[in-house]
Length: 184
Ligand code: AMP
Image 1 (cartoon, rainbow, N blue to C red):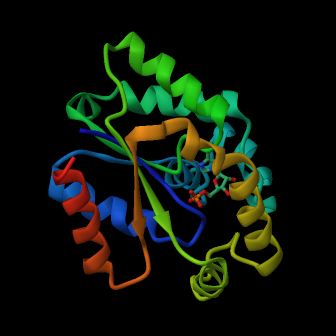
Image 2: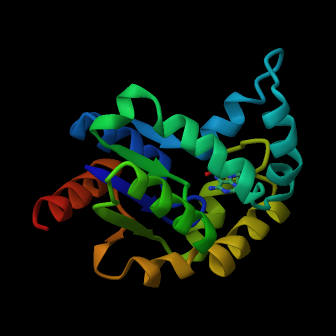
């Protein structure tokens, strides 16, 4: 199965991606995690350093950098049996690059899962998380980038879109997604 998870920052995508990857036995690919791995102290790479200033501002890393990184990750063996993309694509241009990349492999995205959470709750959750890029200004900027650049993907994916109410316990939400995927 090839899945894309979409949702505003703080919607719990990352947590759910890990759990779903385990249930479905496919790799979890998070572009945010890949960027952060390239920034680990003592192991910074040019890619990580390039990404850092965008991440610190809550802006999207340029598409060329991001798409090249995803292309490399998808070329690894474990992604042959399917994958869960978490945080990619984040705009329409990345979505079309992904489509192109998958078409070359004779593949396509099966479903896109949207995690819905009211905005006031998102900001509270993120302020409690304490990541480097979780200051209030940057959080608000990331929410705005989501509304402006990422939300248009929802219409783009049309009937492949599954919308999940992402308020509830971690277990409840995983079950909702798993049920929705099963009944497709
Ligand atoms: P995340 O861990 O998904 O919240 O991502 C953290 C930060 O990494 C974002 O605020 C962006 O700066 C960057 N990032 C992650 N995924 C992407 C992407 N698909 N395109 C551009 N920038 C991204």
